[in-house]
Image 1 (cartoon, one colour):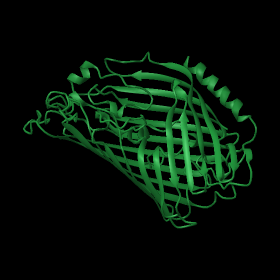
Image 2 (cartoon, rainbow, N blue to C red):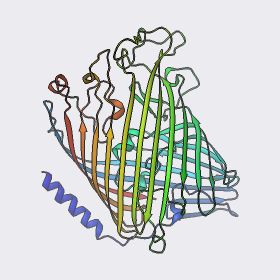
Image 3 (cartoon, one colour):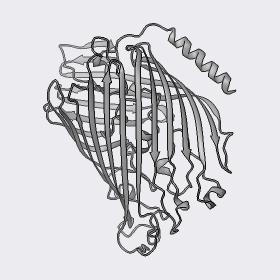
Length: 469
C-alpha cells in the first residue's frame, strides 16, 4: 500500500513539473502590500495577487488563498500501547483564506480583514486598523498575528514545506487583540526594525500556557480573561539590505547574487489565571467569590533567529526557550515542604529549528531540508515526587521538500516527506507540547512503571497544490 501511494505521488508530482514555465514573482505581490494611492474615478484591475479597486482616497485589494492537499501517514509506535494501525490517506482543503486590505481617506490609514473558511465555520484571523504616521513610528489596533518568531509570521502561502514545523507549532503565540507600535531605522538598509505591543493574551487551555486570542469576548467578567495580559517585543536588523519575509531565496538572477542576512530577537511575557488541580491545586477547585482562580502562571518566551540568502541558497534557524512559573494567591493547599510542591513547580522547554533551501532553477524549482528538535521539561504532578506522573513529550523532525513554482507563490506545487519521532506523554499536562501532526497516544503502563518512555515514529508524505487569486 505504501509503495502504491509513493508511485501515485511521484506521478502527480512529475505531471506538475511538466506544467507551464514559472513566472517571476513581483515584490509588490505580497498579500500585505497595501501601500497604494487612490486615483480619479474608479479603477478596477485583476492584479498578480487579487482583485484591486482604487477610487478617490480609497483602495481595496481582495485576495483568496486556497491549499488543497493529499496526505499519507504511516505510524509506527513502540511500547506496549503500539498504534501501528493508525495509518491513513486523506484529501483535504487545508486552508481557504480571503483577505481584504487597503486604505481609506489617505494612504496612511490602512486596514486588513482576513477570514479563514475551512472547518465549516468562518473565523476572523486579522482585523486591524493601522495609522502609518512615519517610517519611525506606526500604530496598529485590533487583532493580528503576534510579531514573535520569523516562521510563524511568514505567510502560509510562502512556506518551504506545506506546513510550518513542529517547533513553530509548539512555541508560536498565534493571534492577539491589542495595540502595537512598529517602526524602522534606516532607509535602504533597515538597521533596526521593531514591534512592541500590549495585548489581552488568552490562555489556550488550563494546561497549555500559550496565547491564542481568536474568540470574540464580551465586556463581562469571566475566567477566560482573568488577569490575562501579554507584552510582546520583536527586534530585527538587516545590515546588508532587507531580507524578504519568507523561507527561501525567491529573488531573480539579477538580484540573487547579493548576500543578505538578518537577525531577530522576540520576547513574550504572558500572565494569567488558570484552573488545573493536577498542576497546582486550588482550595476546592472553584473560583473565589470574585470569580478569580487562586492559581496563576507567568510564561516568558524568548526566540533568537537568523536568516541568510545568497545565489538561491537560504538558511533559516530559530532557537526557542520558554519558562513557566506557577503561583498561588489566597488560601490554598500549597505545601512548600513537599518535593513536588503539591503540583508542578515550574516548566522550562527548548526547541531548535533549522531549514536550508536551494533553488535549482531560479524562481522555478527548489529543494529544502528541515531539522526540528524539541526538549520538553519532565515535570512532577498530582502531589507525587516521581517524574513518571508528569512526563511531557520530546520530539525530533527531519524533512525533505520540493517546490515547483508555476506562477510564483500564486500557483505552485509542493511535495514533502517527513520523519517525526515523538516521545509519548502521559495525559497529565501534555497538551502544550503535543505533536504538530497528530495527538500522540498515552504511554504504556509498563513504561510508566519503569520510568521509561515509549516513542511514536511517523512517516508523512504530503502533496499540495496552492493557488492565490
